[in-house]
Length: 173
Image (cartoon, rainbow, N blue to C red):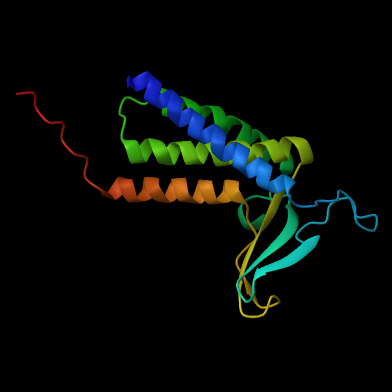
């Protein structure tokens, strides 16, 4: 398979991640208003226990950045909008093709596209995976979605790869 075809395949992986993210978000109800409040920031709209004491479906709107950190929505939309094509170019025209590195970039691109779509359409990201320990009202990891998992996974792989030595290309006999 040519280098260009492999890179195109990685772009298809990114598209699959974005599609999976958007599809899973469609499984849950995200009403745009609740008792007249147009944006129910951080308050669960639906909460259903999946595995007692550690996993639930908890739909929330995240208008901020990572872990609902406050940031101007317009700035966040522009930053994400610029990041998506930059990562796509980074995948397609990178001079090196290391499988795990390119896989990580595809995860980042797919996650960025999934969350960018939400920001364009709703001005907030739909989060629904709730991990907690003990009582459902106890310790919680911030609620997240498939795109967030892809972003964190891709960045983690790139970080690990940055510490690993690159293999020298084998010389032709």
